[in-house]
Image 1 (cartoon, protein in one colour):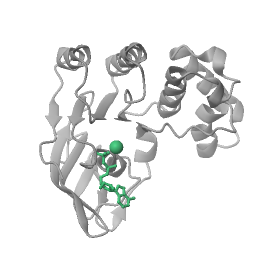
Image 2: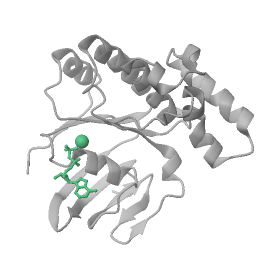
Image 3: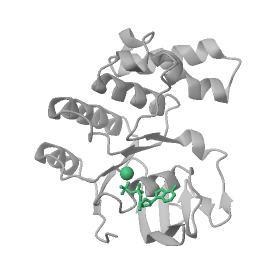
Image 4: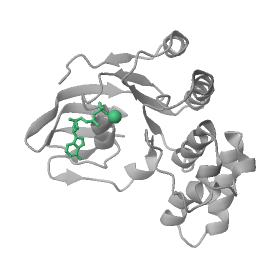
Length: 224
Ligand SMILES: Nc1ncnc2c1ncn2[C@@H]1O[C@H](COP(=O)(O)OP(=O)(O)O)[C@@H](O)[C@H]1O
Ligand SMILES: [Mg+2]
């Protein structure tokens, strides 16, 4: 178990004495990706937030790269914060900052003095995602798909080993959603593990894409 890239063992999470997640267990090897599907309110976002170490857990433990990074009363964010990226459903881009500033921010926070290097890395990431021309615009000047790319760029800017995607196609039209799938495809091909959660029946093209990669699909069967 300890050698697993990511191992979730009997994870339990409560909010206000309600059990939101109970006995959730699965593991993922490096480079492997998975899709988690479940109804709205069943705890998908909570699960990702626990894995991203944004949320403490009440039972079980999370092992990442062979280290116990989360167990009741203990959150170890030393390395994992940089090795795990997350794209939130609401994106959470800062509206008063340009796209470039949004993407470079995690690097400034980590290594404040080297702003120039951070900006270069952010520009490179924006170019990878095809929105380098939007670097100096503000999030509200972008289309939904472009904003999504900016959020991806920010999550990828410090080259995480694990990328958590929360309902990333939920607010997009089908055409833009397929483009986003293409982005995820490239990220997986480049060796990053992806955990993608969604409440909806995914369009068949996305299912076949996931199956094509031979990755495991864990469908959450226990609903609240
Ligand atoms: N910070 C919080 N405080 C209290 N309850 C919460 C909090 N976050 C989520 N919940 C509750 O946990 C349950 C699961 O929420 P969530 O993980 O967002 O579900 P999903 O992402 O599957 O729709 C919901 O009942 C929600 O109201
Ligand atoms: Mg959610």
